[in-house]
Image (cartoon, rainbow, N blue to C red; front, side, top):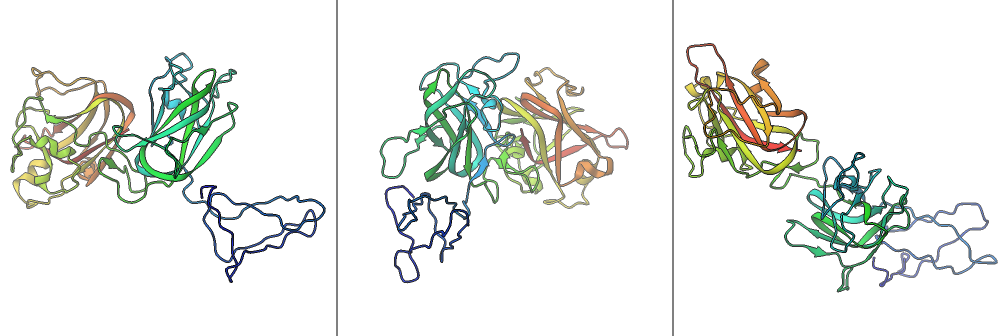
Length: 409
């Protein structure tokens, strides 16, 4: 596994296995092992030959965990710096994935530059792949680089081979189009991986990819699946600051008031659909109640998943069920700003940055899980959900129950 410690393939008796070779120059000779072996390096020792030792070989087997990881749209790429955008829009971190026809280009050509891949949930990394810049006639590529990895972007570890104290220096590329692949002697589990150029041709430019085992099983905290068959992606709203109507006004809950305000229940990561675990958005304080979550910074938003109340925690025949049935639709917005304190919630938010909406037609509004993809991808810091009521019936009170709101890019 490390090119230092070697073992011979042995037969049933524990002796070194002497394989039969070829009898001519064109016939293929197959030899099967009694027991499969797991190894990275394999040597063929010639013992007897015809005139001169010459051979062509192929190894049959199955290499585990070598699938591509962190590719768009599930993986995210960032960098220490990048060159300014031009008309052709190249050299950005998003251009640095291995399938790109362009490349990431650092703004400065120093050893402090890096290209980072966020693969999502911590995943077993078994190999790395690099290429040069593909959208120029100039010869720009990275010739040697280091690897570091982390699970939180605060504590980083350099990749080292077993029994080595210094970070491993990986060989890079010698042209702009050929892929260079390295399988790791010591695979590691991480969410973030950085490629750190050490030597380069003229300018730091590269495309990079990761190989390993795709994450399986239940999504870890802070991640979500849009549906049961999609990979885990980051939940952008997880445990972020949220409020109802004005940021300074935490409206009372129907029951079981929390000290920090019940608006946070919709982003606490708890998929319990019991009423006491949900956020209630009603029109007691305005005709168009508005729930807002601060994503922390401007982000690309592609859609929202909403888990709704299905009657758990209260009898379905009570007045609250009828109170919720007066709900007509939910409208989703993505914006860079939030309503001012003076904004009147008797008027709809009506931003031009509407992501999508869903209404009560065919009870779609009351499905256990509502998936709404934005008509187009929006960029903004705040996601807002506005509730609209029906204009019929003797009661004009209505409420929406948001048990969990998940936001994906």
